[in-house]
Amino acid sequence: MSTSIVTFPPSESAVRVRMMNPGAVMTVKAESFVKPVQKGHELLNLTCTAYLIEHESSGKKVMFDLGVRKDWWNLSPVIHKRLGSTIPGLRVDTDVPEILKNNGISLDSISSVIWSHYHWDHVGDMSLFPHSTEIVVGAGFKDSTVGPGYPENEDSPLRSSDFKERHLNVIDFTKSPSEIGGFAAHDFFGDGSFYILGDDVPGTHTPGHCLGHMCGLARTTGGKNSTFLLLGGDICHFVGDLRPNKSYPLPDPIPNDVLDKDSFFPTPCPCSIFTDHHPILSDDTDVEERRTTPWYQVSDHEKSAYVDPPAAQSSVDKLVGFERCPNVLICLSHDSGLLRYLPTLNSDPKSDLNSWRKNNWKEETRWEWLNELPRDGKPGRKPIVEGLWRDGKPSDRT
Ligand SMILES: [Zn+2]
Image (tube, rainbow, N blue to C red; front, side):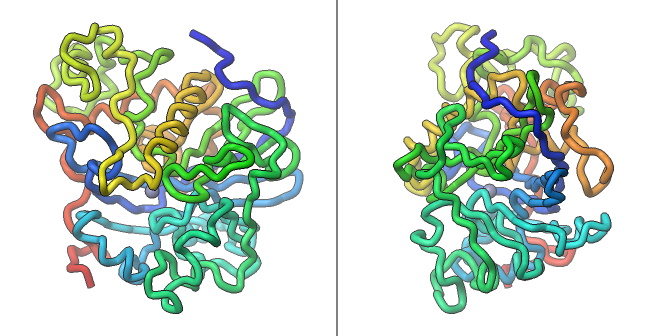
């Protein structure tokens, strides 16, 4: 196994990272996100994560993504009308401002909110934050279909209250001197503790998921044996786009504690339950290749959620380079395995993710997504939510 797939700049500085569950669950049509769609996995179950990043020496606190606003019925009309069709299920039980306040962290203390991108399930409700909180966005944000927001612009995916009278800190990666793992890297605090990675290469603007999409790279322990969390946003929406891979082949048998309690799974459970139905590989592919080839690629369907599917796939291929580094834990926004195994600020506010390597969390969280997959042609997990829910009750679209 190679240990130096990505080279990281040295630094002694680290940030503290705590994960939040912003309380949103949704189902989306798989055809827009992955290819090829596997029979029995036509809907993706998506949970959300958000991250509180603390930079001790400056005292700054920064959020990376906010999840969905709790009053989703106030989303801009363009997005609202997709609920119930492209997004058949949605429930939002809490939100980041509520979780912060419940834990004695005032919204005044958040200096920046970084939007991995401007989509509705990441931007939360910025109007709840004081005007002193800036928004950090990727280059191209202003040129995209965003501004001005709704209601001034009927067709905007954002409300103007999401960003008006607020400093917009637009990261210009063309000025970023460094590159990490093939992504342009902006050193956010100037000491190597936290980078914003452009889903771009320096000097160009290559959209993948959407214009200006960015990832975070937080150094969780500094020094010679630095460790990192890669906050992936929506660089892809399902971890099966990254796994299995050559560094982490699908284990055989699948460890018992990975799989949901389901009488379908034999004990021990051979990995052939999944690998015999690898969606990308043909029937004559050997077992080793089935155990080391990522399950899906990003969708290039006419309704793909990726504006430039080849560029998005190339970003995911670069991400696999990070995934293969033992000192990097990838945290995709919609990876439900993170919420199942790792502490959140919601329920365990004192715990952060910084000791992830010592705690073996990369191993623990690696295969949880298998539960979503069809097994021997039968559907995987049931939908995480059915229909739209408002204030804890099923609701129509209004
Ligand atoms: Zn998303």
